[in-house]
Length: 265
Image 1 (cartoon, helix red, strand yellow):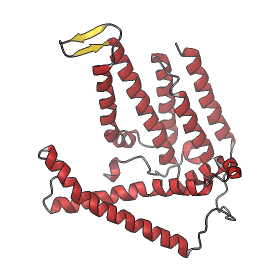
Image 2 (tube, one colour; image 1 turned 180 degrees about the vertical axis):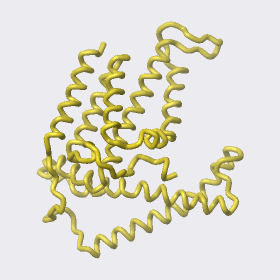
Image 3 (spheres, one colour; image 1 turned 135 degrees about the vertical axis):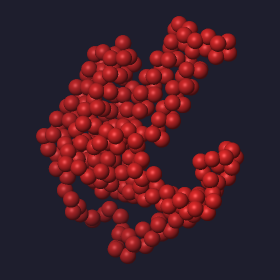
Image 4 (spheres, one colour; image 1 turned 90 degrees about the vertical axis):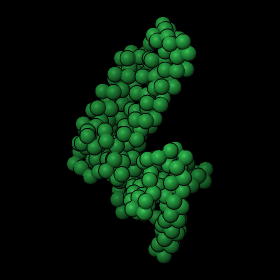
């Protein structure tokens, strides 16, 4: 299970994306999430797809590893595609089987929306694959620093996000161990009727929740024992440094946004 998971997992490598400042990567992802909704035709989605491929190449992470991690997401993509096939009307009628009809607009919207969802997952996954949780925390805290003037708990928010990202792989690993232990005791997770599969999840969730609460308590005690009292007066061991490559990548995605506006219909 751990080998098939990419979200929340950091993969060490010597690449351009790994060396970038976390603030620029967060800004890059935010801008991509905004501009992905500009695309509305084949040309604009082709531009977004090309941008995503370039980002994957710059990360120097195995394409096979990324595609394997997308397997759980592909079910959601397929579901989105089928929903548009069945319920979106418009354009020429492509398939007519009485109660089952597929229109040209349904196929077009299904492919576009599914591709948009897939690209969002890929780009956001690249953020966690190339950035450690502590770097993401520092980047979020720096970017949201102006909100401190209105007494917004910036440090606490960044800390919660960092802990959540850090414990996603840990919880997945714990789930894998519990599943193997339950399977050794005769519990079947992949076979049998749907009702039996749902019932088999209960012995999995209870020990997982107990383990999660125990880990949370241990973390709270450890932080308290080390004198953690929030972000006030705290200094940074790692100083963030904005370089030319970060500015170049921001200009690159702005150029992509300009192309989307030019080719948008």
